[in-house]
Length: 388
Image 1 (spheres, rainbow, N blue to C red):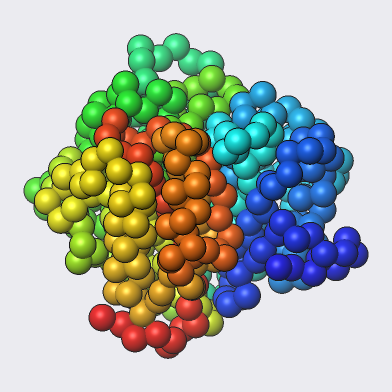
Image 2: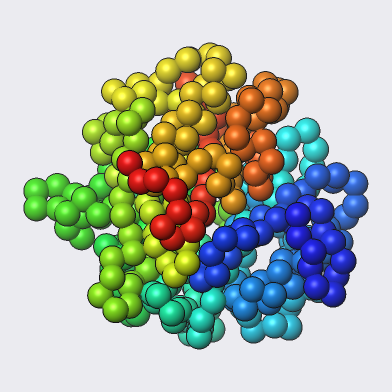
């Protein structure tokens, strides 16, 4: 838990205590008894104080909750930090309803330390560029806003336009998708068009030289999950890109001994990406579900077994970087059915993530027979842990 300077102790907020270049903060909604606006104001006051204490500025924030709660969150945020230029990058709001109540599920924030400026186009802010000691980074927020309002033939075309927009924004700063460590895709009605989405992403990454004949395989870790957005678009995309200083190589793609590569069944993402910055290594774990080493869904119809298998797969990924589940500092759990909450709590109680900063939401996963998915970030000291 975090003692936030000037605002007492917010028992709903946690922050990573290892690593000074990046700060990962998670606020978890619990009661749902007060107004969303007041709850959001309290959350952002605490988050802002925590970032300032670390000397960091917010680079990205993702808020999860009922879609109708988005305007109230925006008003509460404005009351807390609306006058601060540090918070000019807009919130990526994702429909991810809390389990068993209305309102907000939680907020994830990624902050960075260094000299920063906004990435803008006209009067719109799309992200932030930070010049840190170990690397230069770019965070983009809801890139789909750039093409919002244009006539699109369908969801796949919307996703293609979003990827093109991200590529263009990165190129303005001298970045490409080879520098992208992590993407977060939230897709409206995912089960209706996840196949076409994969085809669009694969085509874009093939054109960029990341996959296919001659491709270098340097594809980012990713989440691809159900999630509507308040603007009504089909595709929401956040991403984080980094370039090392001093000729270093801060990113390494990780592989999972319990699962095959997602490209083997047509989905272009890395199972995890490890980023070395300054005094810490950050392990960005992709959205992970109950899929075996042949790409097949396992434990069909059994939520508890699917959740347990998924956490074992996450553990295997972390072990390859010398980390453990107890090193998770930020995570999002997606339950297809809210009635599985008690079973999830039982699985958590047996795992190493029972006390992790975890936002739990209700959302469809990318296959009809998948009942659970989780993504996560773990942090370990540079040189800490035993690499495998």
